[in-house]
Image 1 (cartoon, rainbow, N blue to C red):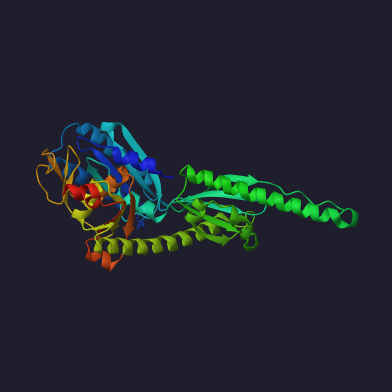
Image 2 (cartoon, one colour):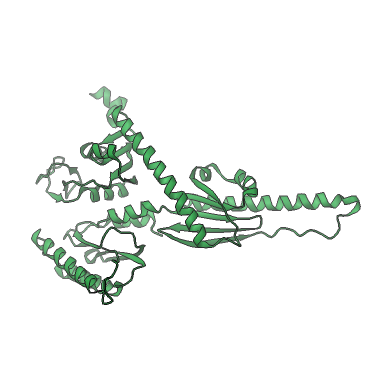
Length: 391
């Protein structure tokens, strides 16, 4: 599972020589058994990346870059013909850095980029389609806790609390029967509370973003009162299941369906909220210039990027200031700037470093009309009382 800390580590890497290599491999449907087309594609990507890098004037320490590209070529050759999984590799010999990630085969294309920072947008966009989800499948004695991410389900914990068995006799005039029944009910209640406590501990430790619960319909009313409000807020849904009888494939299908519905509803609501807040000159920003300014001021809570968003900008090599104007010097500190060919990737990197949530918006005509970039703000610094008085 790729954690927020992992993304932050990737975002923090900077190559002064411009030798940070990002490689995304998406297996194509092979037309012949030799997979020759994949091999040619990878060679072309490496040659194009090297030529482009040299045209931008980066020649220092090229031996480290060549070493990374040769290693990527070797890994790529081993991947040929593997239609089940994609692969992401981030390499920078300058920083003694190499990380590989196996991904579901859902990337838009095979791609290789060489730059000062890693190209994280495809990875973050893929992760946004499959948020980290905890799945608990529960009955009155057992609970299986799974982690779901990137189209895969893995069991992480098993809880077993056997109920006391009924005795053969109900005792004098059946008085023991009621006592035994209450004892069984109390043990089941303790079991449900333990499961809820374990789930809460996992959430507070940052292990998941969403929660899904599988159980028989008749025991949901016994489970739900034990769920902390933090968990109910993250609950995407419940499905009928039994720990002993429901397969992992069935569980994954239920979870993916519920997550897709929740994410789509949340995206639509968030887009409407940002557009409305921006129209009222309140806690919404739309358009690249406004979003860049708010991001730099630390105002942004959620960054929205449209699937069609594309723009160029400049970024200061000293203070990191980004500007929609491609200028040679920074408008803030006067130091040298570099051209950013795809500002969307720089926005994603800055959002990760600042702890800002990122949401990708697809096929929304209204969001298209405002530039395919927006933000929900935590606050507006230009509306603070002190700043108003100073003005």
